[in-house]
Image (cartoon, rainbow, N blue to C red; front, top):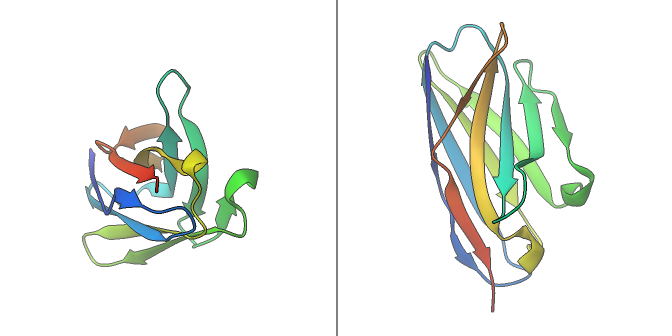
Length: 118
């Protein structure tokens, strides 16, 4: 199994920035991608960004140019980041970290709330 723990959510003003972190541990050797999703009440979870094992990022159109995904790989952990700039109230959501292993098998973190409001 893979354990995922998000952190870094909070309240930020429109136009502000926030960085989310996701610490991954456990069975990491066959994780081939990690992703950030977000979800608002009554809506399906939507993918925000993905980063592959080789470090290649992809973004949803609604965050391109504003969000940056990155990751640090250590011996027994992977830490994934999401730098969010130029935040708008529409970015308010619970943000989830996810890992995808060969199989495929997907794991989720517990989520972290991001609120963009003045």
